Length: 198
Image (cartoon, rainbow, N blue to C red; front, side, top):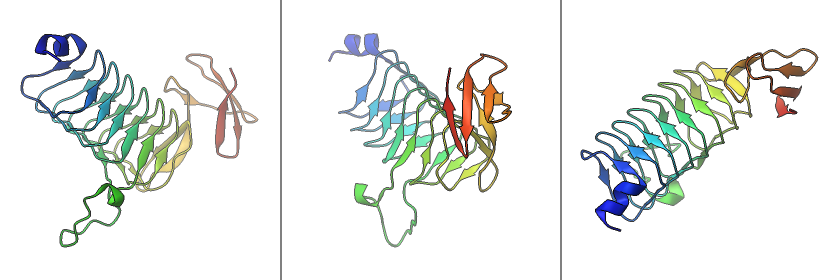
């Protein structure tokens, strides 16, 4: 692929590095001082901020926004429409030791962030967990277990504090039914499972 073809497909700031081979989708922007490592996959229309590192075999879907100072380590999967706030942290090894290196793919625990989820600034996601679709992780939270779809969580460790619509507004349930005051989407709740009904 020529430089002209590359620039037509996606944008990379001149201060950033893109190792080959890797996959980067059309319309994606990679900004200052970032490093895209080989064998990762980045979808279409993504916005990758300043000082971002994306490690080998990380997977990033379409329309993902990764703010400044975020590292996406091997074993992390971000589905479409995920938002990663500034300086939030993923881990990929559960029990790291400097004297006992754990640096192969067999050592890395998979972390999955489902479609439409948002992770606030300075949050930490402990590896091996899954964040459900459209969940909202509050700024500074520490996620130590799986988070269900549409959950609003915050704190250390992060706990469920409510539920949010796909548009990001908080839902108010009455008799296990809720309608978003902003976009009118409707939901049903059963235990800690939320389902969109309309």
